[in-house]
Image (cartoon, rainbow, N blue to C red; front, side, top):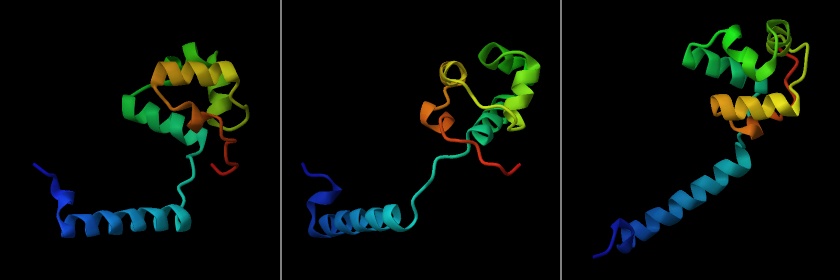
Length: 100
């Protein structure tokens, strides 16, 4: 028994979807988000506080430094945030933007 793409209309739809996806990838590429924004998003989503990030980043002054873009994430911090919060490492290695 065939699936929905086994009909001529289904095959045509599959080609159209593939073309649209290729067009969007070329003309509207999605950049990885700013690492600080990713951390803040996860904090909000999970109801975390500065204290909750200390085991992954360090003392609260260091956490504030990261969140205020005064300090950069280290490789150890990136690993800890990836393992502790499930944030994709790719999102954490980008240079943070200078906007607040």
